[in-house]
Structures are given as structure tokens and as C-alpha cells.
Length: 495
Image (cartoon, rainbow, N blue to C red; front, top):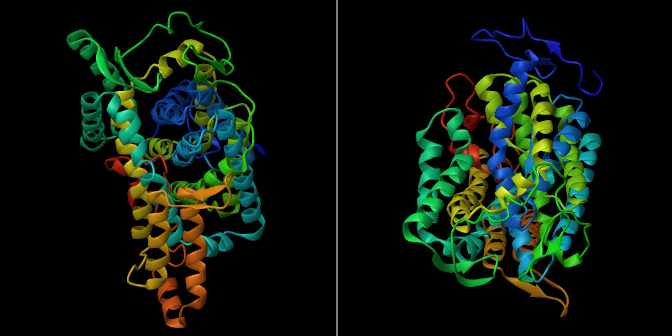
């Protein structure tokens, strides 16, 4: 089982006792395994195609490449770390900044590809040098700050692009997302985004029938127009099966993104590199959570998992797809079912690839009304930012210590406020990139010049990754931090 294939049948493959656990190298009968794989598809589905949409990338291609990236991940970790690689939210803020500066989709995917290479190299370094080096360079006070500024930097995107397209639908979808995530129990709460998308579609269609067209900002046209909230004109003309389309230019002169070759811009690359820090924290937390659930030592596979995520991102972005990351939603499904079999993840990956080979599915995804995205993203983006605070809390970061307080305060304001440094007419460093650089460099400078007693306090209260194994804090997609306790599985929120 060098590649993590060849699963042993768990018991009779059909029944599980109340305390039974299906290990990663085991499986249930194939019928049940396929059913579990379908659950994993539903769990990752909403966020995996919402984030490509908000980044201006092709959601059909993202779904297909998420399946391919997941298979590569499972092979690289030898089937020891059951995880699904969906679309990462950590790049959304940087992508918005790239497009605001006139960057194309090719610039976006080229920058993401470089970030994937860097993440893969970091994973290789951790595999050989051990995780202690990582924790020293990126302590929780720093990773929390980077995650926070990535999330809160997105607030203007919601306010200026999605929410104005249909404020009342956005408000209703936001309320539904919150209620669904906290009032429901079990699996329903884990697919809150997916359910909110369906709800938003229905509400938008009903509003079209009841109130007619709306006059509002149209992201596709780039201006205020009078239009229906839902538009399925392109759906009927698309075939059921086929590769995602190549990038073309629409009638309005705007790019319709599809399969394309990336291009490389230094300015764009610098904007996305901070997301690597968030992905390192995310992957590390997820591996620790899976290790605790499976009662196994996965530290030897930490570097492999991070490298595999980077390789998945490289593979996806090389054809114009979205960045990938391990998904807490799917880890939550494992907690609920106590089935950690990687066979179910292979099934989920194959199903995702099949979805990705349906242009009709891609057209349906592309037709999501802007108001629906407004209601969902106002929750998701805020949750990304608050996950930074969760990192601080879980690791006991002491902001009474000026080593933690002063440099982090500067970095966050620079990142969220869009402060910039202009070097030349062609090169400006600002926003997330500058905020991250200031956070990391200023923190380590502060440590170097601070008295020994302040350094000792920092180390004792969050200066090192104390609670890394106790918290699945790195979920940049942010969904599972709203979930209810599972009566039949571990409560990941306290891990």
C-alpha cells in the first residue's frame, strides 16, 4: 500500500458499531463508500465553486481540477492524511487587488502558480528540517495577523461589487446562511453555503416573477443596468459533456475565463505570496486535527501534506484553475461519520472530475446572481478575518506584550487600509503584501531588540505554536467554525 491504495474491508463492510472507526487504509462496501464520497462532494461543493466565481475564474474548471488535485494529494501522502482539496479563499483578496490594478486572469493564475511552487518548497523543507523551524519563523501572533488582514481586506469587494447588485436578496441570503449554520445540526449545518446558494437562486427567481427586472450595478456589464436577477439563456445551449471552454472575449469586451496559460507579473506575485502563510497555517491545523481524530502520529507527513497542497495548486493553476487547499468541511464529515477511509475521497474526486466535464454544469454555476454572492461573501469574508483572532485565542497570544502588540498593529492597518509604498511608476507594494511583510519583519525585529523578559513572556503566551495540535484553526474557508457539536463524532472546534 505504498501509494495508499488497496484498502482492507472494515468488518463485513456494511455495519458499524457505535464505537467503530474506519481507518484511512480501510473501507466499507463500495456502495456505502460511494455514498460517503457523495457526502464529501456536497460538503466541499458550495465553497469550491463560490470562490472561483468571486475571483473571476472558471468554476467548472475549478471543480474538475479540485478532483485531480485531491487524487495527487492522496498519492503524495501515501493515503495517510484523508483530505479533500477544494478552492482556497486565501487568495481572494490578492486576486481582487491584482484585478483592480488591471491584471488579467493569466496574471492571476500565474501568480497563484508561483505561490503553489513556494508552498511546495516550504513543505519539502519542513519534511526534512522538521516543523520547529516553521513555528519559529511564523508564530501564531504572526499567522493570525496575516489571516485577519487577508479576510478583512475583502470588505470593499463585498460593499462595492456584490452587495449593490441586489441588496435585498443579499440581506435575505446572509440571514439564511447564518440561521442555517447555527440553528441546524449535523450535516445540514456543514453545507450552509450550498443551501444558501439554492435558497438565493429560488428567492432571485421569485423576485423576478413578482417584481420584474431590477435596476442596479451589473458586474458583467461593469455599470448600472436594468436586468433580471436570474439569467439561464446560456444554459440550454451548453452540452452535457465536454472540457471547460478556453478563455474568450464576450460581447461586452470583457474576458470570459476558461482554460488558459498563466503569465507572470512580479507585482501580481508579490500580492499573492502572503496567502502562502495562511495555507501553511491551514494545512498544519488540518493535519493535526486529522491526527487527533484518527489517533495517529501524522507529524512525519506534515511536510508532505503542505507540499502536496502546493503541488495541487500548481497543477490547477497551470491550466487556469483555482488555488487549492485542504477543506475543513470534509474533515467535519469524517468527524460525523467516523469514516476516515481515503477510498471515499477518491470517489469524491472522481465525481468532481465528472462535474467538471459538464459545460452545462459550468453554465449553471456561472449564472449565480450577484445578490446571492453578496449575501454569502459578507459572511465568508468576515469569517476569514475572524479566524485570525481564533488563532490568537487558541494559542493564548498576549497583546499586553508590546512585542506582539506594536508590530502586529502596524501590519494589520497597512494590510486592511490599503497603505502602499511606491518604488517606481511600474512597481508599488501595498495592501496585503506590504501588510504581511511589515507584520513578519517588524515582529522579528521587535523580538531582537526587546529585553529578555519581554521575549520570555512572548514565548510563554503564544510566541510559539503551543496549541497547534489542539485547534483546527486554519480553515480559511471558515465554514466549520459555525458548526454545531456532532453527537456522534469529535467536536473539532475544541481541538
